[in-house]
Amino acid sequence: MPLRSLFDHLRIAALLDAIIPPRRSDTIVRGLSEESLARLAASVRRAADAEFAYLLPYRDPGVRALVWELKYRRNPRAAALGGAVCAEEMLGIASEALSRPVVIPVPMHKARRRGRGHNQTETLCASALGRSKGSLAYAPHALERVRRTPPQQGLPRTKRLKNVQGSMHAPAPEIVRGKICIVVDDVATTGATLREARRALRAAGAGAVYCIALAG
Image 1 (tube, helix red, strand yellow):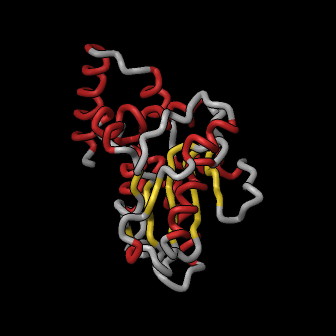
Image 2: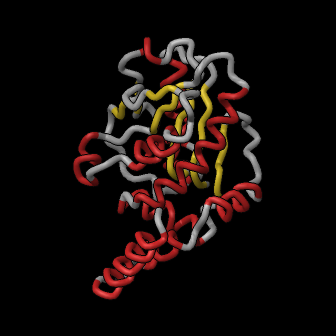
């Protein structure tokens, strides 16, 4: 961006902020960078299951703000930063694969999607795929929610596991049969949603199924 255009952009942004003060979570996300998130990612202890990865620590206030802005506000900066983190993990999987992996967002029930207006995992995947340089395929409809479940947030672990059991299926098995799949979620705690997604994909004949969550 030319220097004058940059100054104009900053001046307009400052004016808008003066008229409509930004949300606190938005302000926090503006202060994040790919470098700061990379440092946080390096501090995360990997799950014992090699096919599961929780990329950022959800306990960190900046990460919580990032997830909030992505989930509820479809914040473009949050999507770009989250996509960069996910892309790094996806490309690592692709580099060791013999065929092009298929990226699959965790699906949202159609009723919930109507209420929210978007599926944040699709937004996250779209951002990550923009950095993949063609080394990843995308199948946004490979998984489907067949049962509307209560939100996982706030449920105890045992209820989270039961809440999502049998809630997903692969409507077109030929999309995933024999393929390496990468399932993407925005946040995971018990991993129940990702395990349900893996179960449904394996039932459809998928090969290796990697599950990644932006935060956990």
